[in-house]
Image 1: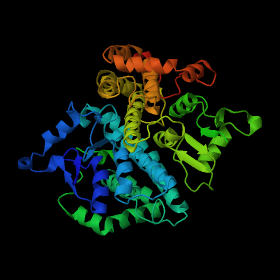
Image 2: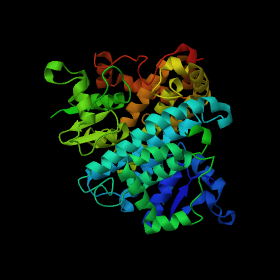
Image 3: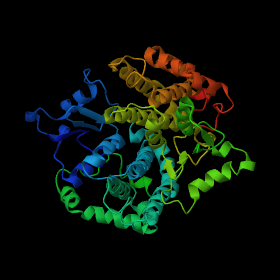
Image 4: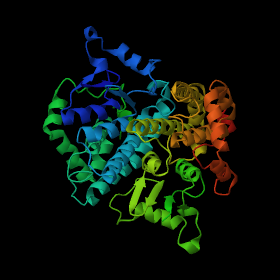
Amino acid sequence: MPYQLHYWPGIQGRGEFVRLALEAAGAPYVDVARGSAADGQVLPALLQCLNNPATARPSFACPVLVDGKRVIGQTAAILLYLGPRLKLVGASEADRLWTHQIQLTIADAVDEAHNTHHPVGTGLYYADQKAEALRAAKGFRLQRIPKYLGWLETVLARNPKGGKHLVGARLSYADLSLFQLVAGLRYAFPKASQRALKKTPLVQALHERVAQHPRVAAYLRSERRIAFNEDGIFRHYPELDG
Amino acid sequence: MPYQLHYWPGIQGRGEFVRLALEAAGAPYVDVARGSAADGQVLPALLQCLNNPATARPSFACPVLVDGKRVIGQTAAILLYLGPRLKLVGASEADRLWTHQIQLTIADAVDEAHNTHHPVGTGLYYADQKAEALRAAKGFRLQRIPKYLGWLETVLARNPKGGKHLVGARLSYADLSLFQLVAGLRYAFPKASQRALKKTPLVQALHERVAQHPRVAAYLRSERRIAFNEDGIFRHYPELDG
């Protein structure tokens, strides 16, 4: 039975962290809301998954992963579940927890990136909070991007198994999420990211190495990879970069 | 060896979710930054924990839990670690993951509560982003508080073991975190919370039941419970309520 990923069809969003794990592992999955209507897939199936009154353990929001009878929400919880199954995390409890801690910190960075264009609220359009966004983005560019990338650099530099992976000597879902964070920052804030990445060569190198991973590279070239756009988390509004 | 909790000494903040778990379980712990200087504790010890160049796996921010040689950051990851050890989570993988998913969703609500008074950036004072805060708080009050509490109500209503706990028939760290979320919302947004809680009687009842749990009640009466204040996540600015 393939995994079912339920996520909004037009954006990478938080679902992309799950897609990257499934793709890097070569795991069979259906991206439900992007399937064909003839298969009974697409958006209504996604909404049914969120709003089905028969679900004993309903998720607050997408992404949602369905694995047989298991229904799991929250990106980091999904990766916690998938990690051992896809062999994208170490075997020890310590390695699993550390990988999860890194994932949660990357998720915080992603939340802050989203906040730059929606500081007042997700219920309003960007155009209605542009003045606030200009202020919010400044702090994100000057303080937060360097702080997050600097922390990831430290994690890599201190890895006793070498600076090629965040945890141990093998690819983990945290590496994939670092790739996606850097890809998103480069898209949304090309100037500010470029400046920060010059000071974090291990982060930049890991980002590039993940992009060249055979299955990841094939995915990135495929139509399954949705292009970054201004409906997603990482949006390129030139006025917010600098 | 008691657990060591490293967190800012003047606020409940995210550390409170860890404190509540330790207190509810009656676990021995040292709140490092609030210890006496004679013991070599207080703030420098906390900063040393965060910035020690010898830490192979450094945390991005507080709270940090130290358990012997283990050093764990990120509130949800700390609770994932403590849950089984403090018997504050079910035994099955499914129950553990579901409890964690609820915790992550509560953490999202906490982040959004913080964003109401710091929409532009954590690096600026509230006074410098008050206009933005007034707008951000409105959406939080009208849409987000009812949505989060409504989701928790649904989780309780659908629990096959009855609506007294979020997961199964026993107290879990998710119940404790629900208590803290509701306590914080009632402090920061008394009017808006009151309105929302009228529609979520199971949430309100669980909040009150947790407050009466003997060890939790003793903790809340003690000096170890820091009072809510306007340096923390939940701040009572009357102009943001309504």
